[in-house]
View 1: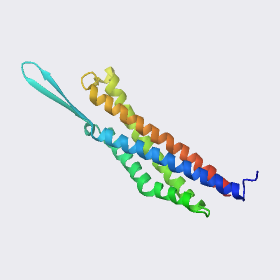
View 2: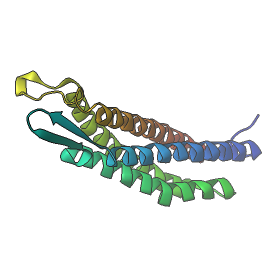
View 3: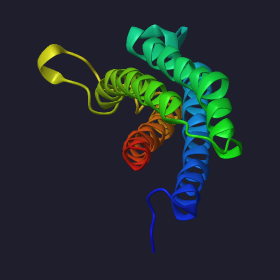
Length: 181
């Protein structure tokens, strides 16, 4: 079976293009879901004593969470407005798509870097929210703000799924480009 230069090469390229589209859709859903989940997270905790005292936890109380929302939002917008349309063109087009794949691999790598930075910053804050840090007098807030912590922890999962999809996409793009050489 000859894969280079014949009909087999086109079917491999088309198969990779379909897988690429599916992975991009999954990455889009993960990034968008993470941004929405984190961006809409807040909880109020009421302390009842002689006085009523309300404590409120919101995602934008910590700049790391704001960065996480912005990073996931940028990646979701990139995937929806740039990468998914190009991925659809790669499926439909019969000609070589080497130039657009090279551009996409550079943009995908940049988006992967942004997503990784946002997820890493948020992960550090989620860890502190759950465990605290007694050496710096940072108390764990999750015993009081359980719903808040569950939601911010869950939003990290979608972001890490999107990161994994982008890693696979970059690898598949490199494979696809190598088939066109």
